[in-house]
Length: 88
Image (cartoon, rainbow, N blue to C red; front, side, top):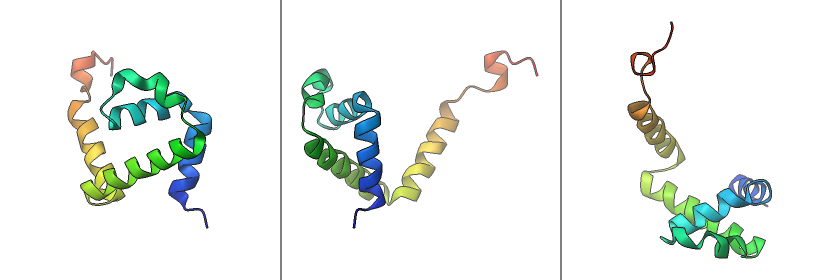
């Protein structure tokens, strides 16, 4: 059976190849080689994305903790209404 993570990775490779190649390049600490990673076959890109996702989630204590940390990070750097000059 194909896992939901695998299904997500397949959709990501098909719908956002530029994003996938950038993710792989950043994870490989080779941000200048995006074009080379984009040329990888779909199975190799899928394996890379799944591995990156698994390692990211394991390191952060699971998907829930990862997304909670991400939300907190975004909140901490998001400008307030006063900083953006909101009219409200």
